[in-house]
Length: 244
Length: 200
Image 1 (cartoon, chains in turn orange, purple):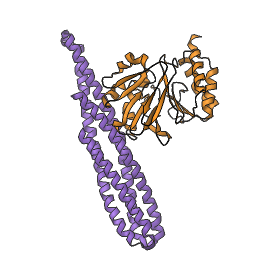
Image 2 (image 1 turned 60 degrees about the vertical axis):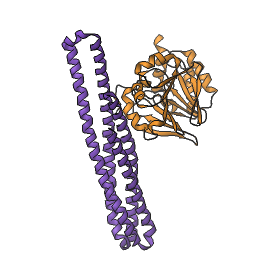
Image 3 (image 1 turned 90 degrees about the horizontal axis):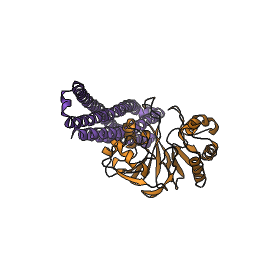
């Protein structure tokens, strides 16, 4: 599994994991992220059960097991958190931040030891080492209870399925030409996103935030002007295409 | 508890893979050091004849270590996956036991008995494969250990050779120091990995 430090500042760093060459072809490729601050780390959308072994091996290249104090699941999908049963047996005294809406569903993946911390619909913040992270509501994009993670210090938004692209595992990590990237994103957003109202609401919210990097759970990372280009494009896109 | 043991196995495997990636990086540095040393030795000519021969050895050790570390990474990842499968099958067996406890008639069912026996057999096969992978990992770690012991000896010889190299002494001293540090770090990684294997 490929892993790369995406951001490194004086107080913390972001690591991206993905482009797993051993991931079976019929399983959608996913990006996982970890934020490390001091002796604490959080794994964002840790991935499907088939990814657990490569993820754990890759994570341990950056931190000790005891440092992983938190997990975050943006929503309930299997590609986000079906590995939970194994994390539950691996981590000691860890907490899982996830939408309150999904607690009863997510527990089906197996959770006896990890503590579930419900995120209210309006969002919340958490302390990781010396930094604060904000859970930004992104409901119905695509899941009915769904959050993005915003790091105000690094100006990074982990956007979950928003900005996702369906591409080959060999695709580059960053968007280079936004227009060329549109075909890889279009169908995903039209079909998986169920609400134009929710989409417009999210675009308005993101415009009021200072985002330098937007990191989706599938596909490529958006930097600088490409973040704005994405928000502009997404705002004009008609979603919920299966209803037509 | 059998299931708990399997869980520990995949943590062991993940740790070994992570530790050996550090060894891999060090071996790459060692290889670069060898190339650098060879360039100095060529420039120094007669004054560093002994050093040139040494650099070939270092390069060879570094390449072999990189190769072994690559293989260990691959095998430990495979080891983690097999251990996870073993854990899953044992968990499944535990569920089947619960089913049997709730419905005693199932003990007479051929289909159920076959499913149970097959699952038990698969879990056993996973455990045998885990044992085999552990032995392979031990053998690969021993190979690196042998290489690094020799590399430590070479570091000491390099210091002697450096002392004879007159104006190139400082450069070659620093090469000898790099070899000693890299060998020490790799050896440390191997020891840590053995420690994790002993946990298994």
